[in-house]
Amino acid sequence: MGDASRTNWSTGRSRETNRAAANGQHLTRPGRSHLVHDAGRRSIRSKLFSLDPKKLDARSQQYLAKVHKDIQSTSLESFTAVLSRAPGEQHLSDAEVLKRRDLMVKHFGVDDKTSPMAVLNSGLSDKVLVDKLTVIRSRTLFRLSDEALSDVEANNMLLVALRYRGK
Image (tube, rainbow, N blue to C red; front, top):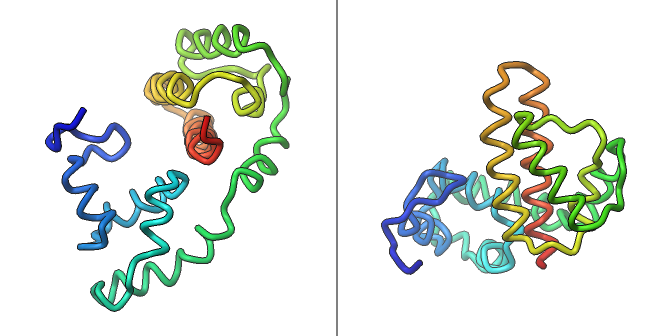
């Protein structure tokens, strides 16, 4: 686990590079998007708010100023408000949530019966759900359609919401 050369599944970058970006040493384009994507992690979020903009290059200062308000206003409640509008069952047993996620893997990310809120409302750990949703996202990309891309976007939103949930 402590191996700095291992790559992060969401960015394909090494942990060492991610650590440098999180410490504010540089905010490259991949580093910036990674930080915003991972802002749900309390440690990354607090690092973003504790960055001294004067220590960053001009482009990084501009980017940080641009996204600071959005990151501040983003919360589990903001994700819940969006995800709760999705159709489908919002309260399921943990066993049923896992069963339906397994079916999504089998059916390349397709599930028209379950709301993303069922996943957020479940008692399953974030690790279990993130692992499963990551596989689902990969399988969804086998479907070459606009619908599949929309499904990936919804999956990504759910992944970030789980980081805010913190179970």
